[in-house]
Length: 400
Image (tube, rainbow, N blue to C red):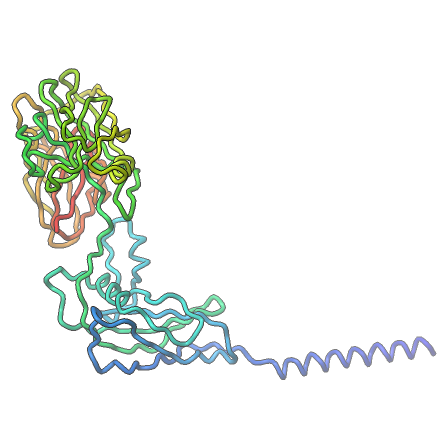
């Protein structure tokens, strides 16, 4: 009898549990799977927003119909061509640097259904996609805007609204390397003239080195032929009245001492200069125009094999230009070539010597070209181009 009672009790408990689960399911919300949601047309949509003077742009939207208040995350996307195929972040994954984004995310990820985005960030997004030349910025530009909702590892998009903005030019270039230059009786035409490409030459960036995104400082080098009879100095600018300079000897270097001697190598030959502008710049900033011994420079003689003396060098490919021999001083040996080129559109090019030898590398704006190497992936703009045929080092220095 007791067993019958126990069995009945267990049966009643089971039915109660089943009823309770059924009740929970009836009361629980059902997760919907919406495919879109509404981005509201902003109040300023019928006016042209001057991005140079505006502060923020306000956008709002309705939460997607997930079936309950879901903790979704939202992000606004801007496209001046109404094309949302390639984001700015995706374009950065292209190591060639030739992919142009069609839209950009602006304002960051938000948990709420509104966002006041910076007008300056919108202007940058438009510039990233359109890449206007400095003198080709239109008076107005239509921009398509949509909102992305991210929830449960799924992304859906709102409708698109169109706004009209007055954009402005923004330089999208990263910080140029912080160049220092060689100048002197052994450099270029030997005339000590402050003309880059004639009497001054920039040291080359070093492949694999990183350059500070704010200051451009890092490690540079130069390999070339030096005559013992004529000296040289380092100069930071062609227009700073020699405020920042380095002279001395090949082992002791005087920073910002206008009375320092010219640096002279002990014997004619090939030498490699290594120059750490991070160290030099910090010393210069700490004691501008004061005599300081710098530790950021080394000069060492090097033995090179199979050195070729080319008589001419060209840039060929989508960019075509004859390069000029830099070293013309009597007794010198030229292994540096320079040209100023204007590149109308992104493309590729390589260096070609008079005997048909080609040099290339995919890196831009600077790198180390190899004999028979890949084409350099160049971007539109005007550049002073340098190439050293001893080391293969090259750089494209952007000209404003």
